[in-house]
Image (tube, rainbow, N blue to C red; front, side):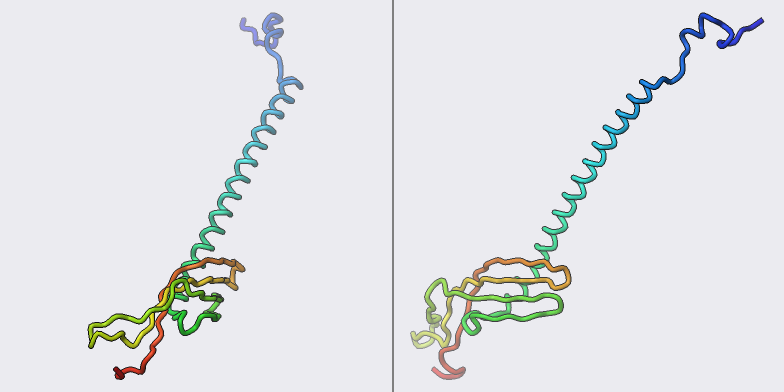
Length: 150
């Protein structure tokens, strides 16, 4: 005749159920692991948000640089314009004195004055609300004599 574990008194002493202390320890381990997991997820979300903000600022800066590349600071030292959601404002300051351009025609200076300008640019993306400020150097030209005149 075979006995089951429940019928054997010696085996019954060694086989016990899941006790209250084990349940508390398991819950504590689960809670600690959950807290660590939520903290890790939170830090990853914050890092992703910072990367997104940096990427938006970089895009805005590139767009603004392309927009002010067409500006001639010698003729328009200050200004503002908007293109779609992009709003750009600049102020130009002469960095080096303007000079006449050199030509080989009759040994005289050409009809242009050329200078190096520092543009202080503020750009805003109205759609995302991102602002960026930067400076860039740019050449500005001004015609001093009418075309065709010597």
